[in-house]
Amino acid sequence: MKKQNKIAVLNLHRVSPVENPFWSPLHPRIFEKLLQFLQKNFEVYLFKELNSIEKSVKPLAVLSFDDGYYDFIEYALPLLEKYKMRANMNIIPQCAESGKPIWNVRLYDFLNAAPRRLINEIKLPDFAAELADDSREAKLRYGLQISSYLKKRPRKEREEIWHSIEPFLGKAGFRETRMMTTDEIKQISEQTEIGVHSFSHESMGFEEDEFFERDFIKCRNYFAEKLNLPLTIYAFPNGSYRAEQVDFLKRNDIKYILLVNEKFADLRADIFPRLTAYGNTRNEIKMKSLGF
Image 1: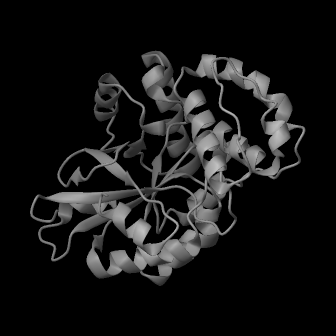
Image 2: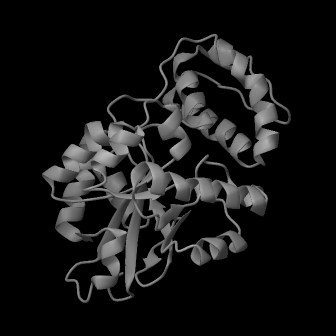
């Protein structure tokens, strides 16, 4: 990897000991194992530092978080400070301003609190999956199925389907995942590299150019007016994008465009595929960091 001028951009979301088998956070204990592994085997940088790297003894990595959950402050940041590392955090301004998580996280919160009987009362067009039992494996499988079903469609179509899910959310008392506020994002911005994950977290590959461009302008205004930060990093939600949207970002001074794609990135590029970092054991998270 080092010889090929590649870099491992590791994509993370939540770090928390509170388990949700429908979409499990990375446990702080496992996150610490990841940092120990990186400290021993990699040089960890921010995106803005990459162009200044002339020579590195070890392979390179970037820690790239998405969404802006409050548990980053609670659990991830103290461990990053302990190991003298910094990370990129790509926030969703709409969530920071409203205090509400994105729709699929609200769905996971509901699923984790609801009994199986109530979950299986949800009937959606062309969606036949049911929660087979209460095992961790069944919950993970169902969470992936319903999330994928809703993500892979245009916003307007998904919103119509969501109207038939919304009433069920009121039937199960649950606490929504906490998001970072604008003030909290500002507070961490000195040691954390802040990027954006779109304003509204829609799958942009399914949206019209006009919607994508309006959404981006809202992001730029939020960074200028609320955060007083330059906007140089854009992470496409759900790994969904079109080539013309990438070109638009380049024309609008975005230096680092983040995808998923599950592969190593070229060090000198402006488009960075990322490797999803997850696992329940040290070995699992280690293998994901190595691209397996």
